[in-house]
Length: 375
Image (cartoon, rainbow, N blue to C red; front, side, top):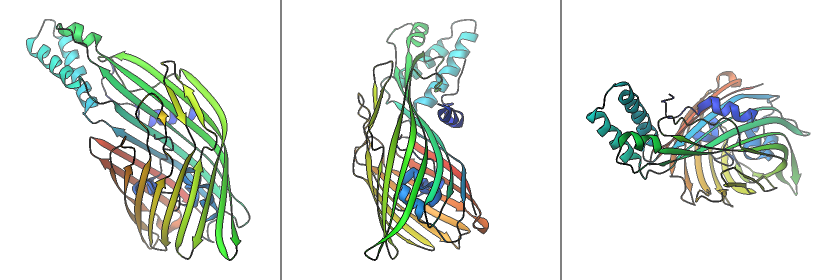
C-alpha cells in the first residue's frame, strides 16, 4: 500500500517532459521575485516569459545553458494530504491488528470526518531547460519546459460501518500535463532613436489529461497513463521598449487557443495570455511589475481561472550573490496571495545557482531551483 500522500515531485515533472499554472515556469530567479519576468527575465530564460528579452544581454555574453530548472507548488487548504497519510497508517494498523479495535475505529472515523467536505488539493510540478546564443544579429534559444497539474477531490462515504466507510471513500484525481519545445528568435532595433527588441517563439506543444478514482486507502497522488492527448504548433510573441534604465514590455503566449477533453468529460483550455511588464533595472538593483491583461481559463467546468498581478525586487552584490523578494496576487481569487523570496549565487559570473520559495495562506507553498552556466 502506498502511504505517502504526495509523490508527484520531480519524478512526475520529468515524466511530463516525456509526455499551473498554464504558464508555469520553474525558474529560481523569477520565482523568487514574485514570478515576474516579462520585463526582467534574463536572456537565458526569456522564452519562458518574453522572447524579446533574448536580445537583451551584456556584451560579454556568448552562450548560456540552463540545465535544469525545477519547481513544485502545492495548495492544500485543509491539510488533506497529511490527514490521508495518517488515515492510511491507521487503516494499516487496523487491518493488521487481527481483531476489531474500538480505538482504531474511532481514529479512522475521525480522520474521515476531517476529510469530509475538504477543499480540493492542487499540486503543480515542472522542469525546464534552455540553450541560448545571444547575438547583435539574431539571438537564438532552443528550449523546452514541461509541467503537470494534479487536482484531487475527496468523497467520504456516509456508512456507519467503519470498514465499509473507508473502503467506499474515494479520491478523484484530475490531471493536466503540458510540454513544449521551441526555438526563440529575437533582435534589437533602433526606431526613431528609441531602443526596442522584438521576439517570436514557434513551438511544438503536447497537451495531456489524466483522470483516476481510487480508494482512499490506496490513494497516492501520482499520474501514470494519459487518457487523452493533443499535439499542436503554436507561437509566442514579445516586445520590449528600453528607455535609459526603464523597460516596458508586452508578451502574448499561445497565440492559437488550444483545448483538450479528458475521459471524465472535463475540458482544459489554453487561451492566448497577454501580460504587461514594467521594470527599472540598473547594475545592482532591479524592480519589476507584471500584470496579466487576460485571464487563464484552465478547466472549463471548474472555477479555477487565474489572472495575476505581480511585483518583485532584486539586489545584486557585485554579480556574486543576489537577494530577491516578491509578491503575487490572483485577481480571480483562485489562488491565495503569495510572498516569495530567494537567493542567487553566481561566482565569476559563470555558474549561477538560484533558489526560491513561496508561501501563501491556506497551506499554499512552493519551491524552485535552477542551475545555469553563462560564458
